[in-house]
Amino acid sequence: MHSMKTTVVLSLLASAVVIAALPREPAYGADPCKRTKFETRLVADACAAGGTPRAKDVMKKWVKDVKSKQAGLECATCHSKLAPTYDLKPDGLATFKKLGGQ
Ligand code: HEC
Image (cartoon, rainbow, N blue to C red; front, side):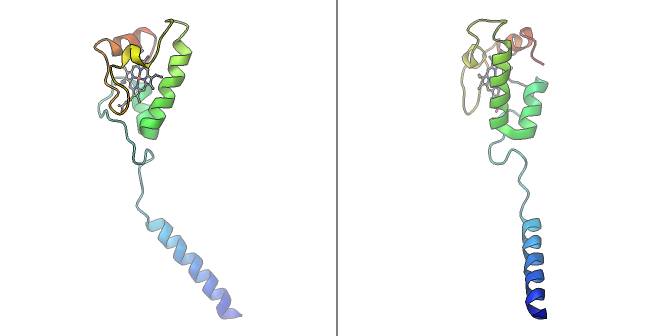
């Protein structure tokens, strides 16, 4: 019975070692933002925390919040392209700031 216990303990230890040894993915996993230089804190923080999925969520929520300031505001108001590059229109950043984005 003693050896049985030892075996269990050892295999638990072994799996702990395996888990600890797995390569650490960054929080944003395989889908980091395309930008590497950010003009806004909102998007910079979102990209650092959760890559493109987080940036998308944060932007969606932000658009909802500021929609009352500009009727018909949507992603394409500021972005000439959406996924995967989310290119901005020439005035995209200015519009973002005008609406209070930071
Ligand atoms: C008022 C203008 C504006 C609107 C509307 C807007 N965005 Fe953005 N978006 C920006 C700006 C400006 C940036 C770049 C921020 C920076 O440089 O820090 C950006 C960046 C992003 C990024 C980061 C992309 C990357 O990989 O670098 C994503 C994703 C994104 N927007 C998604 C959306 C989605 C989805 C919508 C619609 C729900 C939306 N945006 C609406 C202005 C806007």
